[in-house]
Figure (cartoon, one colour):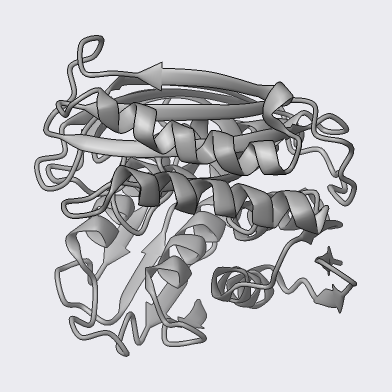
Length: 344
């Protein structure tokens, strides 16, 4: 059994999620201890249980110690991959975070499956589902993974109830480097406003346009809107995505932002466009959120390298778990305005 210290680095749920991902890919028995012991509410929370439960349904095997508040859990996902299933998280637990654990493992094991997840599509401390649809999926596809994601219904905190269908098919991961950034030839701005006034969308988009105009990028922008009268979301919610396409790899990168009570629409717009500009100005191939999400793909495909705007705590967590389970080494090189990460 391989043991992983859940208190390493930031000591958050990210270590558990990456450990579960690598366990499902390699079919190794893994134990994670000191889970979230640095947090005010230590141990497993409902969203972590949901990830482990759905992975057991998809990959088979067993999970020991999975209960609210547990600081140690072990799992062995050693069964056959289910080819079709539906799972209701029961809360607004993040569908995006669950997908990050599931997809690389299925891809590595050359699986094919259709999954319907019911839960939170746009929730705090998690990528929005639109970020997953554009940035995450475009990144995963260059590793030879066929992915389709359909947002059937939005679901927000606290009720959840969002519905996402995902189809995954892989014939094995392809080894590839993602270290170059060509001239961005398209920028997508997607504004989502659910069960709230339409003017919120106009206000957050106007901030983005102003910032992009200052960088002479407005002529590349494509605006997409999802407004109150054309979808059936559960609860009120607001999100904004700003991503640009790297033409070398056809990967969308950038950033997103969520609205919340008391947060002006202009602030949502500012956060999203600033995250996009951090990536754009750095000339890195991937944005700072993709920079940890890509690690399972590169590690499981045999190694490679990529560039990122910064070195994050989530990258540190993912690289730590990768090294413990896969025994792969890595090197981080600070460049003028970005970082180069090599996984051997």
